[in-house]
Image 1 (cartoon, rainbow, N blue to C red):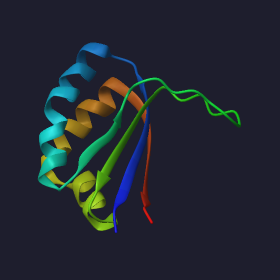
Image 2 (cartoon, helix red, strand yellow):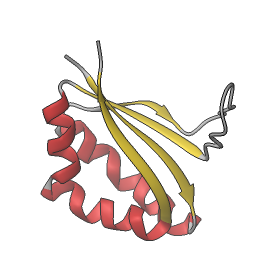
Image 3 (tube, rainbow, N blue to C red):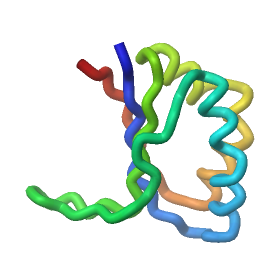
Image 4 (cartoon, helix red, strand yellow):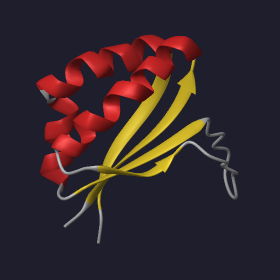
Length: 95
């Protein structure tokens, strides 16, 4: 069953974040993941959530998504992202 990592990202250093954007796709692909949403227009329909940059990644399984997030391959890009943004991430199993 597919799983999704959903991120709400506030970019604080656009130059460093641009570096992250270049290196992260390969790490996602190694774990069978793909981008479903990568930025783009977002609008709140209900509630008080004010999203910044929304990213949705799809992985084959919940476990595979968590393996990618904790992987050696993603460690350096994750550190780069964390230095260039403020992010909230969740992983959720699909149906």
